[in-house]
Image 1 (cartoon, helix red, strand yellow):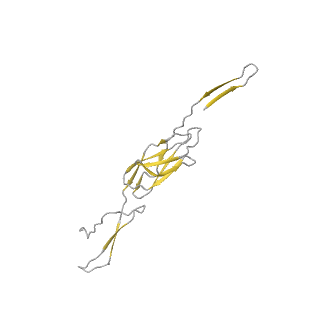
Image 2 (spheres, rainbow, N blue to C red):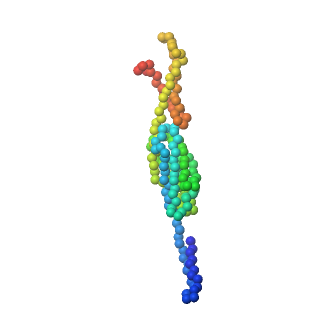
Image 3 (spheres, rainbow, N blue to C red):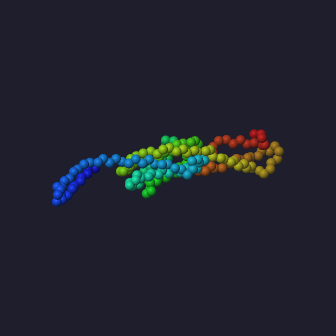
Length: 171
C-alpha cells in the first residue's frame, strides 16, 4: 500500500510531503475443531464445528471450511457463519478412531490454514436378535421353523452375517 504524509505550510515552517510504502500480509488464524461427543456408535451421526477467531481489530474470517476424517473429506465445503463458525454432520462408516481436521481456504484478509487434529472414535453397535417360531407348540418329531430378526442399528444399517440357533447350549 502506498502512503503519503503532507505538512501544510505555517508562518515559520515550509510545507513538505513524503511518500512511502507498507506491505500488508494476510493474517493467520487456524480453525479450532470441537465435537459434542468424542465417541459415537456405528450408524450414529457425528457433528463437528470449526471456529475461527478474528485478529484484534480485524473482521470475522469469511469463506469456507472443509472437514476431513482420516484424511478423507466429510461432506462438502461448509460456509463460515457471521460469528466465525462452520458445522458439519456425517455418519462415519468405519469402526475405528480417526483424526478430524478442518481446512480453512482463506479470504482477502486471512491466509488459508488447517486446524490441529482431534480424535473421533466410532464403536461397534449392539445388535439384539429376536427369535420367533412358526407354531407355539410342536409335536415331537415334527419340523418347526424359527426366524431370527436383527434390529436395525442407528442410521438404518442392518447387520450382515450369520445367526446360530441353539436349543439350550446345543447348536
